[in-house]
Amino acid sequence: MRRILAVFFAFFLSAMPLGGAEERGTAVLLDVSGPIGPATTDYIVRGIDHAEDTGASLVILRLNTPGGLDDAMRDIIGSIISSSVPVATYVAPGGARATSAGTYILYASHVAAMAPATTVGAATPVQMGSHSALPGGIASDAGFAVTSLPLVLEDSLTRSGGILPTDEGEVEDLEEMIREMAERFDEQEEAGEEDDAAAREEDQPEGDTAEDDDAAEAEAKDDEAEARDEEEREETADEPQEERPGAMERKIVEDAVSYIRSLAELRGRNAEWAEKAVRESVSASYSEAAEIGIIDFVAEDIEELLEKADGRVVKLPTGEHELKTIGLQVELHEPDWRNQLLSVITNPNVAYILMLIGIYGIIFELMNPGSLVPGVIGGVSLLLAMYAFQALPITYAGLALMGLGIAFMIAEAFMPSFGILGIGGAIAFVLGSIMLMDTDVQGFEISLGVIAGFTIASMIIFIGVATMAARAWQRPRLGGAEQMISAEAVADEDFSADGHVRYAGERWRARSSQPVKAGQRVRIVSKDGLNLQVEPYE
Image 1 (cartoon, helix red, strand yellow):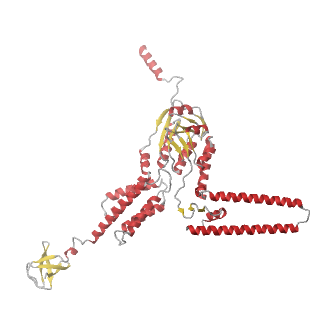
Image 2: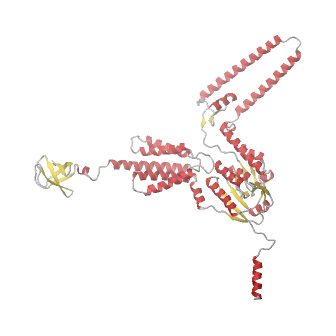
Image 3: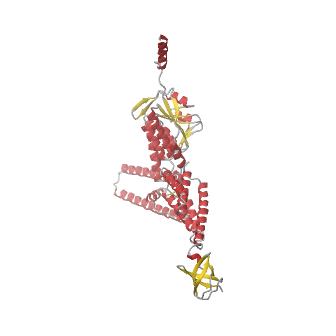
C-alpha cells in the first residue's frame, strides 16, 4: 500500500509545473504576399481578431507587397491601431518589399522589422482614374493646365475649368495675344508710375533729399522683387507638366502626407523620410531603414525578431505594454475557405469573367426558356461578380459601355447596318472593359489579353447565335394549317364540287371549283376548319 501511495505521490509531483517554469505563449503569424486588396484586409482583420480571442501575445505580419488599394490599407491600419494584441510587421523573406501601401502598414505597426535584402518606400498615392493628354501642351487633370501660358493666367484658367483650344496653331495665337496684352499692361503701368513720380517731384519742396533717397531705395527694392518674381515665373513655366500637379493630385498627396506623418508620430518613427517617400517616391534598403529610424531593427528570421522585440514597450489602446516575446510558440494562421474564395473572385480578371458568364447565361436562358442550366450558372456567376465588384474600385460608366456594346452586337444580327452596330458594339465593349477598373494600382487591372479574347468571343457568339435565331424565325413552320397550304393531296373519289381527298395518310373533306377524278393530284389552296379548298394540278 505504501508503495502504491509513493508511486501516486511521485506521479502527482511530476505533473505539477516547476516553480521557475512559465507557460509558453503564442504568436500568431499572418503571411501576406501580393497586392493589398479586400481579401488581404479580410485575412488580416480576422487574424488579429483570432489572436485577441485566443489570448495570443503577439501578431507577426510577414509582409511582401507592391502596394494596393487605399481603402483596404486604411482598414488594415485601423485594425492594427485598435488591436489589444501588439502587431509586429516583418518585411520578409529576402528580396521582399513593402512599397506604397506596405509602407503605411509598416509605420502603423507596434514593431517594425525587415529582413536583409528588402526595401521599403515609394509611397506616393496612385491617382485614381485616367487623365487624357490634349494637344498643344495641355493636359487634363482636375482642371486644365497650360505649360506655356503665363503663370497668373494659367492658374485662373485652371481654377475656372475654362475650355481651351486644342489645335496647336490656335494655342500659339492665344499665347501670342496674351503676351501682347501683358506687355501693354506693363507699359501702361510703367508710364503711370513715371507720371506719379513726376507729379511727386513737382509737389515736393526743395531740400527734401532724405525723402528722395528713401523713395529711390524703396523703388529699387520693388524692382528687385519684380525681377525675382519674373525669374520664378519663367522657371515655373519651363517645368514639365508632370512636375506641376493639379489641385486634385495635390489634395491626395497632402492627405497621404498628413496620414503617414501621424502614423510616424504615433510610433515614434522618422516622419521626415516618410513625407519624402510620399512626395518624392523615395525608397530605402533594410540597413538604411534601420539607421534612420524607419524600422526598429533588422532580423534574419522570426526567431531573431522575437529575441530583439523582447522588452520593448509599445502603446496599446489600454496603455503601455512591455513585450515578452522570447520563447513564444509561432502559430501560422491559414486563410479559411471564405477568405480563399474572396481572394479568387476579387481578382479583377476573375470578376470580369464571372460577370460576362453571368450576362451570357441569362441572355441564353431568355432566348431558350426552360433550359435552366444557362440561367442557373449565369445567375450564380453574376451574383459572385456583383459581390466582388462591391469590394473593388469600378466605374459605372465602364459597366454601361459594356452593356451598350453587348446590345449593339446582338442588334447587328437583326438590323441591316452593314456591320456598323457590330463594330460599334465591339468598340464600346472594349472601352468599357478598359474603363471598368477605376485604379492604376498594380494587381488591380484587367488584362488586355482577357479583354481582347472576350471581345472576339462575344462578337462571334452573339452574331452567330442571333443570326441562327433570325434564320429560324424566318423558316416556314413545320406543323399546323400553315404547313398544309400549297401542299399536295390525292383525290379519294370523283367529285365536281364536294368530295374527299387524302393528305399525309388522312382523309379530309374537300371542295373544288373544277371537276376532280379519283387518284388525281390536287393542291391545297386554303383550310376552313375541317374542310379543304383544293384545285387540280394542271
